[in-house]
Length: 94
Image (cartoon, rainbow, N blue to C red; front, side):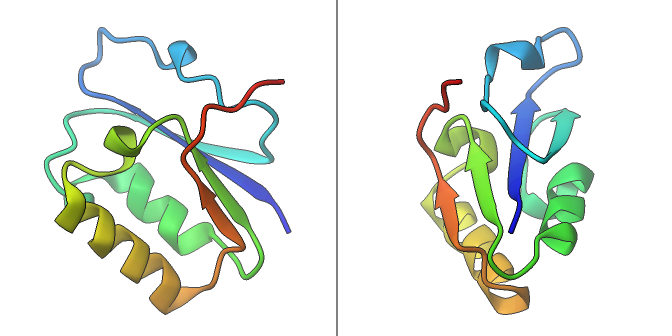
């Protein structure tokens, strides 16, 4: 079981370091607008990578999805392929 992090900012000029995820085993990052899950290569790579029992940590919901429908699609895709232990939307410290 691994802790997988996902960080995204909307522009190349923004800094990913503000999204502290704490201790993670692997992090997927991208600097681009979150139009849809299909348009985010690092998100797609994370979905392919996650394994049964893994936990996914995100700084906030809006970094993972644009709206509720997009969030539901992402979670359904993850659950359809593998079953992570948890998706944690809380800010991680330490």
